[in-house]
Length: 107
View 1: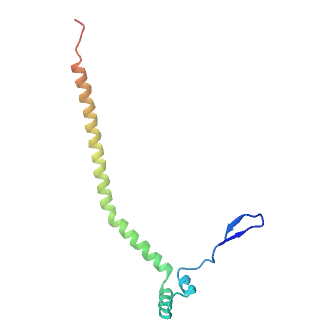
View 2 (view 1 turned 90 degrees about the horizontal axis):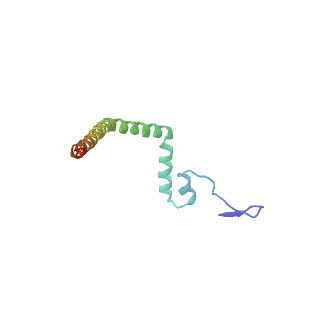
View 3 (view 1 turned 90 degrees about the vertical axis):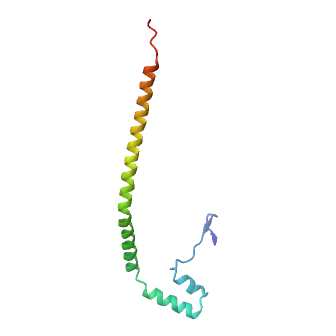
């Protein structure tokens, strides 16, 4: 909701912060069985261990993608180098062609 300050301005009023576990429990929308199941999950969950597991999985994914990423980077680098060589060769042909086609009019 909103409230008005002493200066007459409207300011936002926020709910008391709750964990994702507390919101449905406090709202009373869960059956007793659901509430009990949620409580069991909440008690079994170790946030520090969960964070370590997530970090471990993320590092494993990064490591598994590293070789492919490096290979693609190397291929792209070689392709870029080859492209630059082709471009330089094309410009060189144009310059050579322009020099040989230009007739001399000194006669």
